[in-house]
Image (cartoon, rainbow, N blue to C red; front, side, top):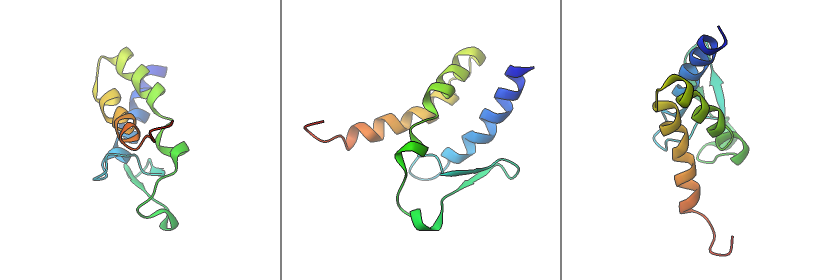
Length: 88
């Protein structure tokens, strides 16, 4: 029962990764199956919003055997690596 709910939620949250950037939207509109950004964030992202789903999505991928959850969420890691400062 919990896994079924987790898959349903995961599928709904996956739509927030559909932006051109591949980063998740700051808000998930679960009923509509879409995501959106706050107007004051247009063109920007809040690290705490885009980099916190990876653990849950990796686990969901492992227990369902569906790698799409891990693949979509891990794009954030690749993008963060590209902007990592040389000293940090």
